[in-house]
Amino acid sequence: MNDHLIISVAVTGSFPTKEMNEAVPYSPKEIIDSAVESYKAGAAIAHIHVRDPKTGQPSFKYELFEEVLSGIRERCDMLVNLTTSGLRLKGTDITAQRLRNADLKPDICSFDLGTMNFHDRAFVNSPQWAEAAAKYFIKTNVKPEIEVFDTGHLYQALDLINRGLISDPPFFQLCMGVKWGIEATIENLLFIKNKLPANAVWSVLGIGPHQLPMNIAGMLLGGNVRVGFEDNIYFHKGVKAKSNAQFVERIVRLAKDFGREIATPEIARTTLRIPTIK
Image (cartoon, rainbow, N blue to C red; front, side, top):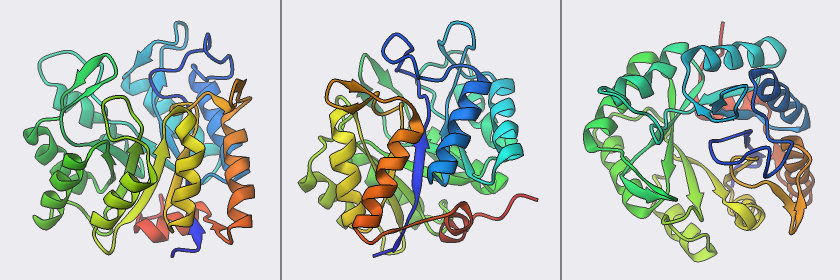
């Protein structure tokens, strides 16, 4: 077991809205403030999506990602993970649009593998996308966070690893309970965990009411965890979370009870072999 627990916080995502929970951040300032507050609570990694500041609609504007990345780095040393999800993108060259975030030199980029039905639409991630993205992350020296929503995604990742297209150690985010993805159960988490490479660093998230059970299971199994409004807007059943930091604070309390030390950003960098930004 790795005694140091790496906490990631996904501060906004694409689906939650202020109508669902008024604390969901929209503007770059709100996203930056929420990430920094979560850092102070114990999070080492911020997973970043951006929104149209006025409407709150999901956005993929390069300038918004750039503003959020630089804003977080000006205020703290937490690692920044920029999404490369193409779920809502349109145009002729979706791959180029998705990979532009890697040019900003974040510490990490999310890496989705495998096409699947995702809520109300198809989430298309072709084999051609996977290979192009893996090679681009090597070129830009950005650590990919491999998103596993179902078992086939894991097997595709293992193929890329065996071909030398993923840097060591591979970093997996096990995404449990997404509609039409793998169900959030202990049995399923153990199955996927036991298929991971021996040197893998892994984290787990649970959607909605599955967030806390999957976080606890991940901590007990020696993995790392992700929390935040992207995955869940409720702190308890029927009680909306006040902030992303509130989720982080709960994990920190539980981790101490379970004998897990909280990883600082420096420890997370060392664990994931991500160079310090100069």
